[in-house]
Amino acid sequence: MKIPENIKDILVAGSYISDEDVKRADALVKAGGVSFVDALLRDGVVSNDIIGQALAESYKVPYADLNSAAITAEQVRKIPEEQAKNLRVVLFMDGEKEVTVTTDDPTKKDIESELKKIFSGKKIKITYSLTEDIDSMFVHYEKPLDTRFQKIIEEGGGRVAPEILEEIFDDAITYKASDIHFEPQATIVIIRFRVDGVLHEAGRLLKEYYENVLNRIKVKSALRIDEHYAAQDGSLHYEHNGIAVDMRTSIIPIVEGEKVVLRVLGSYVQGLTFNDLGLNQKNQELLREAADKPFGMILVVGPTGSGKTTTLYSLLKMLNTPDTNITTIEDPVEYKVQGLNQIQVTQATGLTFARGLRAIVRQDPDIILVGEIRDLETAEISVNAALTGHMLLSTFHANDAATAVPRLLDMGIEPFLLSSTMNLIIAQRLVRKICEHCKHSIIKTPADFNTPQLQDVAKYFKDNMTLYEGKKCEACGFTGYKGRTSIYELIKITPNLQELLVKRPSAQQIWTLARKEGGRSVFEDGVDKVKNGLTTIEELIRVAPPPDLLLQENEPIVSEKKVIKSKESSKQKKT
View 1 (tube, one colour):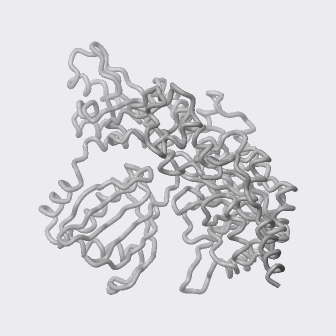
View 2 (cartoon, rainbow, N blue to C red):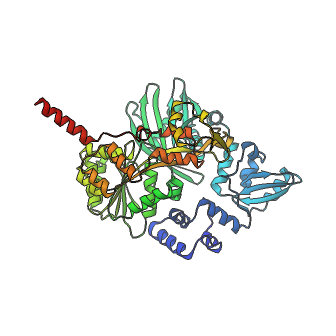
View 3 (spheres, rainbow, N blue to C red):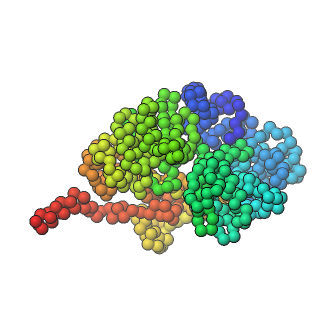
């Protein structure tokens, strides 16, 4: 974000922040080295839109929110590319007598005169938009990747890999891709982006040019370029036009060559709040209550790519104050945050989760984040750290919150230790949000629930209920979805649950008690988001189908104790 040096004065003068907010932000800047704006964003004092509104007022022009406006490629291209990029302008509205344009630099004197040459006879109205929003509109001038590849090859002679990679990386950042896939086939390499959790083909490259691209990725990731038959993992850093991102590199040999997947590690987490994540008010209170305790464990579970680390870092953002010592150990470090002591697991030097965690405990930490509990040794040290006066946050692979406990017990953790340390278990999934540009209401009738899966969820919705979906427009790539939010399931470890954990309960027993104490499943949280118009029934079912336990809620659940007793009695009968 392009921010003027006097942003503090602008925000104070516009009453967007108080003197207390300024003092708190200044303390974070001094302690952690973050910028003043990042400190405000991290505390949730302001949002990007509030920053934009304040800057617009300072320029004495209206603020234009490009994220909520349905700007089409045809509309953008009404201003020729060269003039648009030189003037930093985007066409916001084109009326009969007046044209509204938006720019991130309203101080440019020639904007109005140059645009009058394009929109002859019309009045020019100038507004302000954030730099990153202006840049995101310029993507409409870009030709397809395949066309750009061909131009690079024709003009570049033999050295084309850097330019090809630059085009791929720039597009991935523009489209907010979470992963970049390079998939070699017989004669071509298919490049795909994962956007909002779904893979889309981005372009194709002739295989004869792939080796140089692959070698450049390996060199930038500090990997061996002469290794072609073993899996390799690394990371690379990319900077271009003021944008810097880190990527995690994974290379594996397949039949047609070496496949590369780059995980794009976003820095946007510093601006996220609990509301942005999708936590409702009740769940926010549960999370804050658990985090306010001086010691204990908060565990976030879910499959790979479900947003677990993002949730934990949003929590760390709230806990990261000058008087708190926070240390993390991760593989890899996905978000680099000022004020945190972040450790990267390094197998080559023997710095594992377990060894690093032992060292961290001797570093006088208040809060410890363990990237993932993968084995018994890491689990035992984590539990003991939580037991000896530290707040420990970690992720764990489990299908739901209730299943996490039996899995930890099966790994070898003692039940009484788990009962004493666990504060909160969070399960989550990511669902795509309906595109705000093409969102429209629909009436769901009983006839619409005509598939077995939809019939299973019909009981959660009233007949002839008003819901929402996307019409599939250019802004969302004709998918009907843009952006993602999380759906959550939280189990607070109450005294009753602590007592149950000591008895080695099954996941069903844990969930049954949690339900009685107010727990709601991931699916039910998703139902609320469908009813509130954030996502669709089809997207919810794709990510989190209704669990059998909920569909058969009224059926009695056979407890593990009864099963054990029946086995013992049968043994006695045999004897």
